[in-house]
Length: 191
Length: 245
Image 1 (cartoon, rainbow over the protein chains, first blue to last red):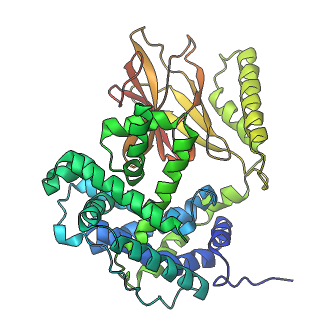
Image 2 (image 1 turned 30 degrees about the vertical axis):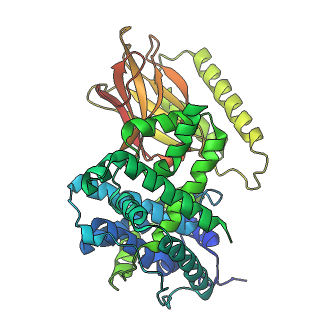
Image 3 (image 1 turned 90 degrees about the horizontal axis):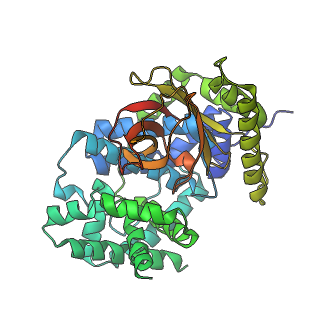
């Protein structure tokens, strides 16, 4: 008897396994869940809509081809996707040697945005909760720490590049990044 | 120890990718042998992963999904079919070694030695993974082809099925003088990390363990260049072999 999979109900890890088995509906569902997130990361790094679209396509195509390399014990599916996206986008930035505009480096406000109706309810609720937690943590960081983290995250700048860009001492930048990351880790661990 | 403290402090920035090159190398070298710092790194990598949720969200254009589906349909199921029909790791291993040893000049003794060594290594790896519930899916192999600088050269990297370790086998690489050696580069997002330094014997053959600070299957590309004996911090010489996963 054929079992019809309800892709909206399966968890992320199982979805990846189904993609390994070349189930197109599984990739479609994964895009519904995380397409917006991947695109957002890409567009806020490269600052260019069409390039961000290409990157998004590349990432999901890569998932289609390399789903068998995903290791659940190393990262959540969402983290796996966004890490790949960030690396790919920063790589693109470096290749084009784009000078970013300062105003494009903003973290989101803490107010959670309405969940996309395309998500399955569990994913949507889970994501909304994580977003709230993270954005609250970010709101507690001093602005100078948030600023250097933004340069590091969105533009892939190194310590000395950030120091040069913001005209700050190298030691100050290093300390701010370290303190910011430590604080975030501490806050995100408390549950 | 002050050196270790110094390295520990660099780990959050390393996870973010914002260390300058010399500091990044310092951390990478330290990570190879420090499980505590490896665990630290993982916890900070999780923080970086979370940061994506603090990115302002923008909807992609509605036609993007269809473009994706069109693209994967064009490519066909070939890639994933290969994965589904994955042969046992033993078969993969034999195929990989056979490919490398295709030259008739190979002595049978060397062939057996390689198989024994690799099998022994792999059995050790497998036994070490005690909590593995799934049947191993098999190795990944990365084929390396010779460049114009070494057109006859061939190589393969066999990555263990947990993606952590690997073995490099090369053949038909020209022997170098004492002042130079070959160096393997593990490449990820444009960053190159050394995976080992080696020389070849008269018949152009060598097999080495590949050690890296990250799991080996994190790297997308691999290359081998000619460097001064003892290696270089980054590739400086001619590239002789290259391949990608």
